[in-house]
Image (cartoon, rainbow, N blue to C red; front, side, top):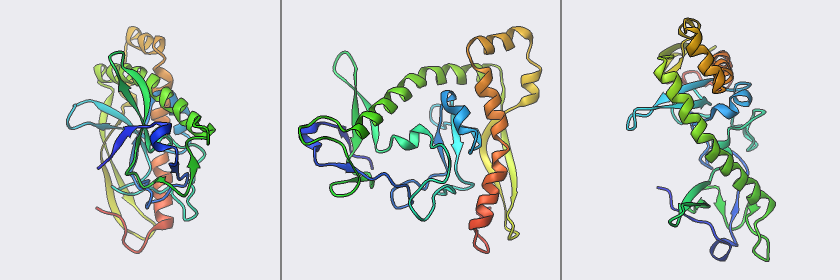
Length: 242
């Protein structure tokens, strides 16, 4: 369970954050939320699908890292992330935005119990005199970007949902070692339905800057084949949950 608190120089001057990526550091996740504003970067390496939130009922854009729960095929043994771009929701860990006071001021939170938080290893958060380090400033900027992206993302999801552009997908998977399974539980943009939109609906998507992320998401689905290839290279004789 997370132990999220307001980050302050007085209480947390000694803390550091490990910059490596590994299963031990909590990065072995199948997918991460992503945002239309970063789809252009994300689609170069990852499939962009949509996950339906069982509680809220809405959809969450998802950058897919693996083919089963608890799997991230982009982690390597050296502690690096094997891709040109890492989605911001993964880069910002263990930080988040907190809203404080009557004016809902945005301040940086930290999860003190996250395995990346350390007193000995990693990037320092504060200088000796208490000022935030360059690393913490960069994380703060990243959190601010995510905060700004949320409103655009909500409008994007509302638009494609209202136009009924999302459909559930099932992908049959066969690894090089013969192991078979299926990728289920995600949604993708239905390209045929997009083509059938009338001019008014299409123009509305264009005016809201939604067309580019839609096409980026469509194009990114071919990256599922890249995930299968990665898993085949890493697979033991039977390593895909069916």
